[in-house]
Image (cartoon, rainbow, N blue to C red; front, side, top):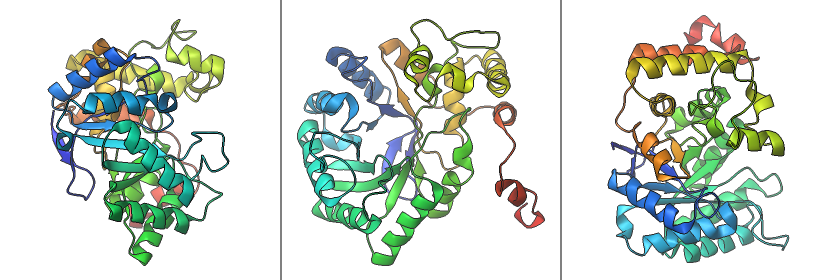
Length: 335
């Protein structure tokens, strides 16, 4: 497992980040701890969770495992924003919820600090200055080391960075967006902001709920029985069958299997390696329900795809740019 700096910070993290969303949901505590053991044995030190995952159980499971480890060897990331209780103030990015949220996460994790504290999504109801000034206070208190944002638009991220710069507040060091071979709109603005501002990008859903795992290929007429894609179709989640089964997806999957067969890597390993090689990406967040799934994903560590294979995958997922990106792309000054 290689290690990288998180964006322009001095924080060193593994090239894969272990996502703990499955802990307490698909993975019981013993299985979750076994997954954590194997990930760290392979050289991983970066683990991502959130206060809402399994209603806090994900943080608690991780916290009990942390008690048996040297805390400073690990980089623990969690998130705050969504509802954690019945009170109107048990949600959002207001000062009350941020302070209560960090204290609750610290208790569940059983630690005195959070390495990367991320706002889980934009909050239109709270003044951005209130959110950012409170986050700055949390860093100055020592309870939080670095800050990150997830599920922001380009203008929201840039505005937050500019306000922090203006007021001398601690700035976001990381961005956690949806980004994979099938979801590429992140490249239009978000990764450009990250590149210009020195943020490390830690994408979620690198396999898009199983679409890029190797279990679906051209010719399929329905999602595999019992798969996350099948569940997503039933519940209306973003990675549903109806949202992705189109010619562009089949084209991407054709390229994925072609590179897999040529390289000897599994389709999942190819998808994760492609993402890990994209500009600004520090560490794709990989989630696993079982040790077998984790072992497959660990095979992407240390892999640099052949440039021709990476280009083939990128081209397969290219799509017509909407305005104004289409105009910018044809401007000679931008070439």
